[in-house]
Length: 253
Ligand code: IPE
Ligand code: IPE
Ligand code: MG
Image 1: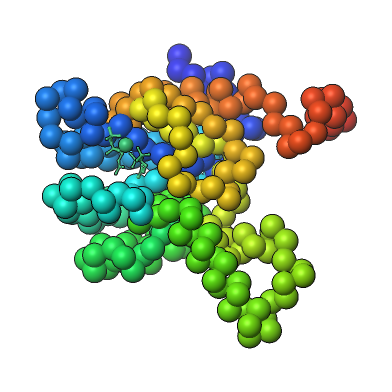
Image 2 (image 1 turned 180 degrees about the vertical axis):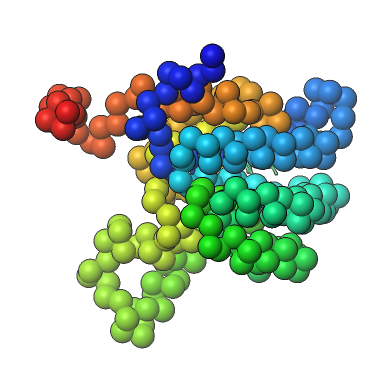
């Protein structure tokens, strides 16, 4: 019996964000090159995407390549870009079949042309799908995103389309790359690091954070279910008291 049986199906997070970390260390532990870890990481991506689709998660955002990752050795960057192109090419039919809609957030134009082309095609091919929204964060960093949003807002103010005094957090969120998606309720980071690494800083304001020592290539369906189980045991208070939350819960039963 897997953990699925002990999960409350009515309280599955709508949006899960993941920092897929530990591919390099996973490979090193096996005496392999870091790139081998990235390849094995793709197997986990497939498994987690399928599981999310199966249990009814609506949005899954995966941190696949950060702005800072451009500073890695050139061979590793090249290998990652090549893996991205090959994976998208190979998986797009499967995404279509499984009703998964692909989205990309990040500094799209900084990606190599071939990546842009494959991604554009895959996004286009899955645009009619109504199941899981799979959001790949590529060449993404939150500070970049927030700065871009601030610039776009300033342009709208200059042209008279927006008004400084009426700006609130909801309106500001419309300028972010994630404007079409709700905020994640759960953020998972693998491989034992306890940091956010420039990921969705605005959107994670009230997310529950889950850290596991498991490296990404070992993170599979059961690990995800355990994370969701842990999430379901938390009390999300949003600044209120526990008593207020409990009172509201009993009122709605
Ligand atoms: C995550 O694994 C994948 C990317 C950042 C692209 P890492 O490559 O960061 O693996 P570690 O953290 O060095 O083990
Ligand atoms: C974060 O992982 C980025 C991705 C998972 C794509 P890193 O491995 O790059 O993060 P740091 O540098 O250890 O914080
Ligand atoms: Mg890492």
